[in-house]
Length: 427
Image (cartoon, rainbow, N blue to C red; front, side):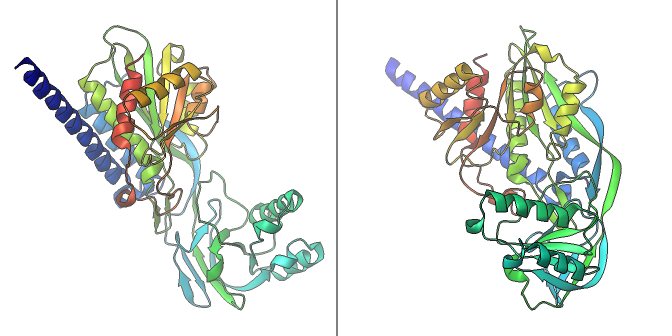
């Protein structure tokens, strides 16, 4: 009888845990769907996408009972930013291309409108200085098209030279062309810019611009905002016994809109925010002995700006942070997770691996050294210990229009979440 009762209790516990972790993934899917929706405009700096995202996160913090810090949930700061709020049009001999999928505008490009003749620089002409100068002269007031040079033919010297040529064509005010197009067979990815370049430049899929093209029509309007007001978002759970603090963070911003093209940023980094909010919900229901601070950073994609502002203007004692965890790209996990700073804080990393093996959670927990590639870096510079973790494998959508909520699998999200709670509870 006693063993039967124990068996029933054990099954009930397993069922409860399964239900809890299913709810974790369901809530994550809800968060990602909201943050990566068209209504939030890619969480960039057009149509108040960043402000709408920050408002949603703040409301979730409040719903879970997180307290403001020094009376506030938001920490505002200002940035310069180049944006493209209006529709962008590009056609080749009257055939229109799709912005986002067929071509990208370089993020620092200024406005340009009109129809222009085409001047090609072919592969075998790229490194011939005399021909290059002739083509530059012929391109005055026209659009200069630089053919892609095969990687297999590039040694280090040629790669450096090609980089210099591309920098001149896309950035230098002495480029006489009205605009420059760089042909590419690679995946199109986008970034942000806090400056305006001297001339417009674009990357176009190589197969879409034929050698016999005669004219290109371009309608491109940028809006440079010298001082755009954006924000970090944070909330706190007071510890029951200890003054030490665990900080959990994820950046919520993405690249917003390039004209009519939206960059949803489901994996990068709506998924990391989903992990952050799930942990905030969990620990609001399971109060820890130490204080916990949850931070959603803005302007990470522009160069870790939000986290830099936070550590330079801290609202908590940075020296009191016991450990921090930075979540980014949390939406896959087919091949496990990568732990930046794993070799720096090896004892913590080894414990993470032990927990993963003991509870048979993720396929792999990989170690990596220090890398200044996300918001944790600014905390590390202030001697705050911690990990930056991202998932591995699965979809390859990144910094493009295809990083969408409907195709983000959240493959190992429940096990990832469970591993994080097991790890955090060790402190």
